[in-house]
Image (cartoon, rainbow, N blue to C red; front, side, top):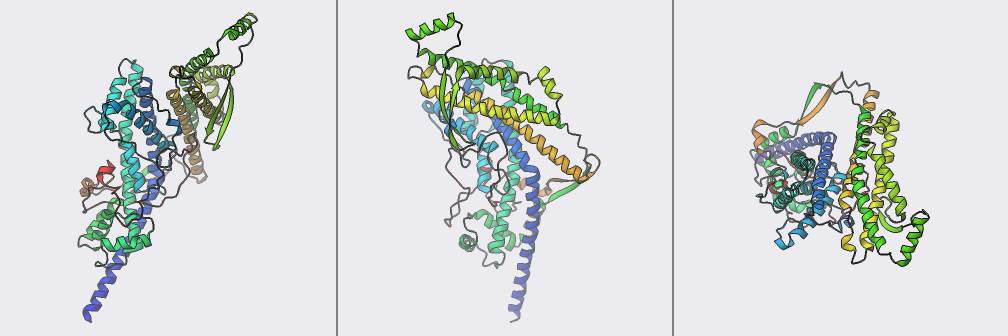
Amino acid sequence: MHFFFVYIIIKIMAENDIVNYVNTLQEVLLARKDWLESSEMEKLKDNLRAYHTSYASLYNLYLKKKLIDEDPYKNESKISELAVPESEPFTEAKRLEQLSIRLSDFDNQLDFLANFYTLSTDFLNLERVKRIVGLVRYIDWPSLSPDNVSIMTKAVSDLTNQSKAGVDTITLSIIGESLNRLSKTTTSIMVTLKDLNTYYRENYKLSIRQNISQNMSANEATLDNIRKKLPAAMPGTPFYKELVDEIIKEDYSPSGQDLKDVLLSSLMLKTEKKKATKAVIDYKTILLDGIQVIGGASKPLTEIAQKLDENNAIFESEKKGFIYVIKELIRQITNGEPEEIIYNMEYFDQTKDTTVKEKVNFHQFRSDLDKKIKFLSSFMKGAAYNKIAAMSEDQVIGYLERNIKDMQTLHKTLNALDDHFKAKATQNDRTKIKGIKPELSALKNTFVKANQLRYDYSAQKEEDEQMKRLGINRENDDLPQNAAPAQPQDQKKDNKAPGNTGKAPNTAGKTPVNTSKAPPSNTGKAPATAKAPSNTGKAPNTGKAPTNPISSKNAG
């Protein structure tokens, strides 16, 4: 009887230890979530946009140099969830076709990720982080070399070297800058993904404890028992054997307390107080930078105008007969206006979720386009820029918003014209039609970047006004700063990432979480829905362990 009571007392003490640890872990993870959401997610968004912009510059160069073919179905893709493009080996005969398709798909996926994907701690989870890692490491930019073992990295290295042949120094500089930025942003993105992976791993383990294991004895807490209880206690949640193994070792093994102490230490955020020395922000300069970015649209529009004229001439040449020659002769004698050319176009407007029909008077459209190009060119520097710089902030932001909207509308019309010329050309003339997809991509980059600057202006302005309403002087007050997680000296070598080597021992955190969508950031584009199979990011409830989304192989 005496031993029975001793057993009960020991059991209660053990359960209390687990409950106390669960409560502490929950507090630490909530603090870590706040840090990720307030500090790291914005960095991730900015780095992903920079990554995509740099890749788009190289991709468009490959197209212009005819190193790859334009994907005719690129703008018809519907993405509902991220998917890493194919990376299997291909034969030399299929090289051009496969590279064209894969790099186009990669560009679409990056565009969706950078501009439309919901990047928040509540939406992401282990599966989604795994997909982002797969996209970011699809091409190994830091080790771009013809000798790389990765099929796609090796192929892109070859394309990049070929694209440098016979180009001017400015283009060479752009290539070098793009490669350098891709390498740096890859490293920065992977650091953030490692932190996210750590949070989701430990949050998964916390959920298992709260819903299943914290009231179990050491004999009850087995892999099989937890796996059997998972479907009823946490419907739809995948079973990760590696993480459940860690729970058992941390809660029931002789070294469990040491493991938990190390883990909590690695998860805790160190709060430092330091003197805020933030310089006064010149908000108007941010807006003027946006004006200059929009002005950069004049270059791709000039190239587009030239190609449209050539395509229109091909269409008009089909009409030339005796009657056309007589009409043209009379028009020239009488100095009459050219005969109107009307193109009836139809395209799907994603912002309205409907098909739009539009009539374009080509001569009038081209005249307006030339005026727009001249107008945008004046934004770079000169009298027009100085006039805008003299306006008030409210006037400048209104001016910027109108021009972003104009560029978005113009982009839709130009895209529809491009599709119209390709679809309506005769079989003999189809190969003569010049596509404008690379220039359209460059045009889109200008208004997306300008829109981001407009958003940065609004966000920073609102933050500053809130600080003033709270009576906080940003230059003189001591403001607490959330630093990165503290790393125990003896654990740094074990914190690999964002994954796991498959070994059980001292794992300093990793995890998934709930999936509730927040609206994407305003990028000047409507939410796409894209060509990848629909996927919720959750593994099916089969009772079997799914493919490990957290191994070091997947985390890169």
